[in-house]
Image (cartoon, rainbow, N blue to C red; front, side):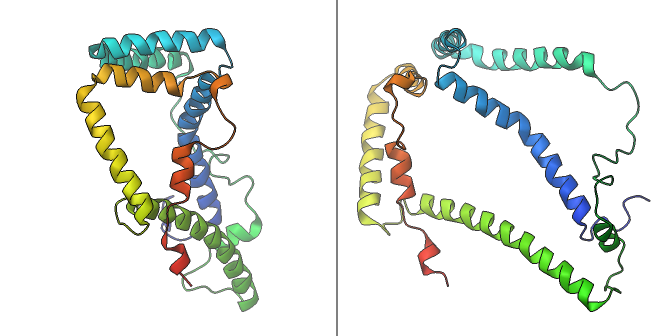
Length: 220
């Protein structure tokens, strides 16, 4: 009964879904921040322990999956103390019903087609256009990154594609003659290197990727 009209546009429901997504991605964001602290040696003891764990997992790869599942088991046991003790109920804070503007609620319960005056519809349309413009910008940025990936092998920029093809050939030869464990250790130590050996400027691969062509120059 409460899901009637849930497929219709609602500013309140859109805000609630956005914060739900951010809550889901919060764990990944926290892991990314923690890994950044490890790479920047914010806590030297933790970083050294991560180095030791990394070496063990590279030398004994059969321990990777057991370590992952053991870690998930420990997380589940840790969160057992905060388990839900009551059945789920309607949460007005989760639904943003406590902070919704009266106009947003009026828009949510409006009929389809609308039965509101033209000036109110125009105001809501302009508000929706501003939101759609932000989404359009994000989608355009994602498309740009995808086109840059495609341009690596499309020869749109002959020099960039030639450099990438030569790099792939050299990497294939090096990976063929070098044991995988050695490559993994070198790559891991390079990523976890001390900030003293880092530069504040963007890395060479990132700078190279940002200079790749995209179709934004061909759009009106």
